[in-house]
Amino acid sequence: MDINPLKVFHPSSAKRNGMWLRVLSLGLGLVCWQITSIFSGVEVFILPPPLKVWSRFLVAAQDGSLFRDIGVTFSEVVLGLIVGVTFATILGYSVAKSRALEQVLSPYLVASQAIPVVAIAPLLVLWFGYGMFSKVLICALIVFFPVLINTIVGIRAVPQAFYDLMKSLRASRKQILMKVEIPAALPIFLGGLRIGATLSVIGAVVGELIGSKYGLGNLINRARVGYDMPMVYVAVFMLIFLALGLYGIVARIEKKLLRWQEDK
Amino acid sequence: MRRADLNLNVLRDKNMSTQPILTVKNLSVVFPDSNGGLHALDDISFEVYPRDFICFLGPSGSGKTTLLRILASLLRPTTGEINFIHNQHPQIGMVFQQSNLMPWRTVMDNIKLPLELENMDESTARIKAQEMIELVGLNGFEDSWPRDLSGGMAQRVAIARALIHDPDLLLLDEPFGSLDAITRERMWTELSRIWQARQKTVIMVTHSINESLFLADRVLVLTQRPGKIKFDLKVDLPRPRNDDIRYTPHFGKLARKLRETIE
Image (tube, rainbow over all chains, first blue to last red; front, side, top):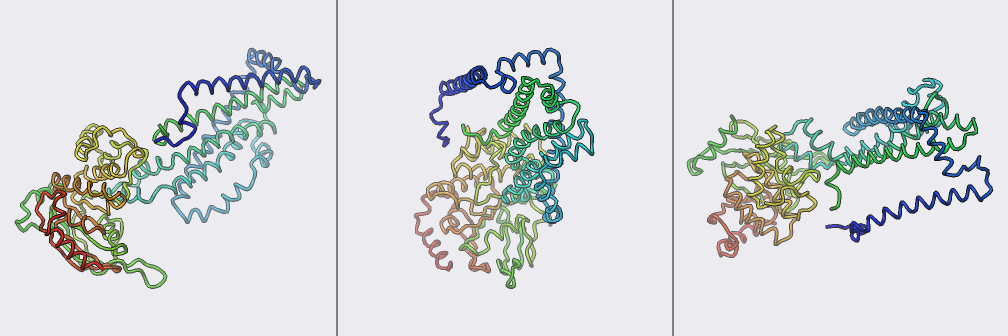
């Protein structure tokens, strides 16, 4: 039974219309921007029109420097995600399974949530240098907490009845992990990953703005110092696409793995 | 080779004094709590023979579920002994009050779970699961998700899952308690038919007199907490049983007897 009211009256033609409306809305926004920047009297330097940003993008894309920066930021974000998620998942699972460990670690966990990673990012850059390593670390730290919490909540939410069932069938520890705990915790875990993916982009940019050699954050700094405003906008848009792309990938994974949850 | 041994015993004629598959002696359970412990079961003793269908009947709070959890090794008794035949722990199939299906597995995958745990190869497991699906009458629902099943269908899947690995002992914990009255009565007939086909040793707990009489060979009545066996009734109704049997005078007489012993 379909109980989603938004879906009930959604034949495919309506879906297509929705897509067109979105494209139309975006196009209209761009037109408004173009008109504003030409007629509002605001300096082109402050608010360059979208067409100018586009042509700046084409130039930067042709000389290849843009892709080097995208590549660096992308690597930092993804590496940070991998490191952060790996540690958060392992620790989260251990904490979820052991009350004692939870007691031991909880002051640190709470503290780690209370410290805004953005605030200690300058320290991390100072300690670990201008290279990629400090950025990966910032990303990992930023990603760590939401994934940790969601892992703990996800594992704790596994119904006792499934453990009873598995034990009555004399399942091994590993079988319980693979066949019950992971699939049962997956929806909540993936929710944490989705938040983590966008946060990781923020972490990388913050790190790069503070001190870096390459990357989109660094590009923003360079362009700003050189009064190359269209380039700043190009970099911002690249970051938006990067964050959206990662979010989209996680959403795709969710959709594939959580098919059983979907309404038909 | 333990399984084969047990099956041999099952094949022997029930009337030829076979040994009990399960002996429970002086079983007591006390759950620790702040004021001296909660006495759940008190001095329970009984024997189960191969192919028996035994029903524990009692009000809620009589420790019925506790008893089943002990037999399934989910819980340890405080005192007393449980001996399985040849001192080996039997394979167990269990059906719970809720169907307990894993929502991320299809009907087929839920049913073959016990075989996966035994590391049976996929194609054999699927063939066996298909047989079970036919036995419980769910053809065509192999690839359905649990969320699309009615309560009765979900419980059929749970029964199929409990039987697929050919367990020595089937434990049923008020399996139809969450179903509506009409579906419940239909499931009695179904379970009776399935039991007839598979000839399993069954221990079931319930608080329904009709359910216990319709299904069991023997009904053991438990008292309020702490649960003690108060009455042991042999159900001499002919098999196979169908709906009509519930309206016979003999059924009524047995039901009355049970009713009188339950407080």
